[in-house]
Amino acid sequence: MTRIDGRAADQLRPVQIITDFVKFAEGSCLIRCGDTMVLCCASGEDKAPPHVPEGTGWVTAEYSMLPRANRERSKRDVSKLKLSPRSAEIQRLVGRSLRAAVDMAALGERTITVDCDVLQGDGGTRTASVTGGFVALALACRKLVAGGVLPESPIRHFVTGVSAGIVDETPMLDLQYSEDSRAQVDLNCVMNEAGEIIELQGTGEGRAFTPAEQQELVRLCAKGNMELLMVQKEALGG
Image (cartoon, rainbow, N blue to C red; front, side):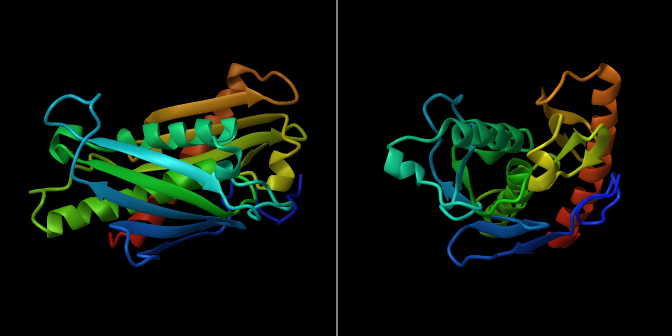
């Protein structure tokens, strides 16, 4: 099957990460995966929420889409006085994924919030938020070390996320919207740099799928996540 943009079934869209994209955030980047663009900003606060153990910190995330990030204008969540269920679910995923990268005891009693704002959506916004959000988080931690606040970075390992799916009975990596909107099976996979799975979300959108099909999609995601890891390392300077 030929994909609409000419990619191979196991090929990522072009990926670009521009660091320090905004002036004031402790860490920031713009991540572009094909036509999907997400601005990720990490902000530090010198206190931890009350639910975490004494002496440890916390990492959390917020996610939103700008009104014209998609083909038709959507209402801002603030106009509805609450997050949409989709935004709430995605920001929990991003927060869990980024917390897996951090030694909370080494972070100390402080909070880092990573804001992920979708400027343009063309599929894969949640996984782009994880991949870009990690870069923003790592830059914020680097700034804490450079400022003498922390003796060393609390980052334990890199974290990346990518999607895969089955479209017209063909397993594919990194679905864009035209593929994602008609996928029979959709799967999101977050991994660390050792290739271990942090989170796996798989859904039979058009039909159920077999364990063997799931394993093939995870294999595609492992390939994509390893390539995203290289992009992250290049963006962070090695």
